[in-house]
Length: 380
Image 1 (cartoon, rainbow, N blue to C red):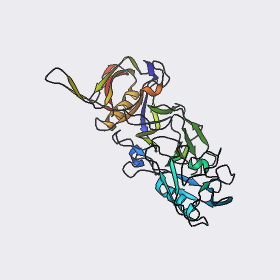
Image 2 (cartoon, rainbow, N blue to C red):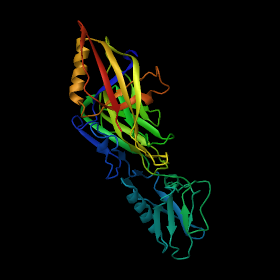
Image 3 (tube, rainbow, N blue to C red):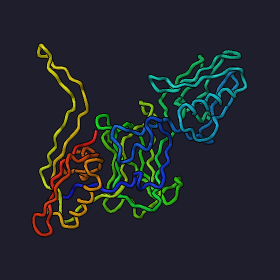
Image 4 (cartoon, helix red, strand yellow):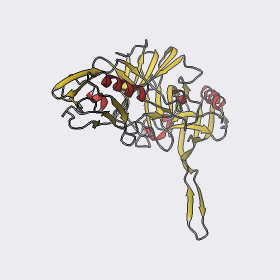
């Protein structure tokens, strides 16, 4: 299997190494800190809706009297929850000169925004979506192809759950990582839409208008990753950011489990040799009933791997030994088994968040040549 394998041996996104982390939004029960490397994969970061309202997207044009347009503005600012943003939209609508009051909600089934007038005054409510001053139309999910007339309730045409989401990392010192990866839960995958824009960015300062490094990442439901053993950028940078624009995610949120941004170990003398043994593990419980029927309590499926490192130099053996001592059987770690797609159609299939079954041995086969047999299971 050659030295194609990359052992992801130093994750800078961890409580031990981060100087600070900020994020766009989070569900209280699924905080952003769950992406740290020493937590179960079932723990996730789930967004709660981040809305950046500026002078260019705050305007709403409506009519409460036939033929009379009014423009009201959503207050500029950054809203870190969906509910606070919807409240700001209601406040803007209520500020119109008529006597109507409004409710702004999200449909629990479709996740589309719904705006309702109580019909105060002349029982007229129109949204003038074709008007150029209605700069919040797309933000709210309304098509600008036609105005909305003839009702007191209008449901947006499209799902809109945020303007964007992000995680921003301050490492306190400049780094040039060689690997980036994010995953979702083992059997549900990454809860980011295939149409989303996902970027990894880096900069010397915490200003993101024109970052020094920016790479749009390729979507995959299993993992989203990027590797370069020479370094992802031409120089080290202190600040790094994951940026996600997934405004029409039908789930109503973005969700990821774990994130890696750090170094890789790729031996020069030693390598991983074929065969790679992959075994699927099904934790489901199946029982046979009295008449021969089978009943299953369906649980998670995962994979167990067995592989051999061969021809390792003493320096490489020491590096692996330090890795094993650091993670033990207690903590999960990362490995990219096929980053160059030698034996798979997608490298993401074999970007794994794992844990040792038992600590591997490290025999000396001959002078300056060690080997090591590894058995590990993908986390669920």
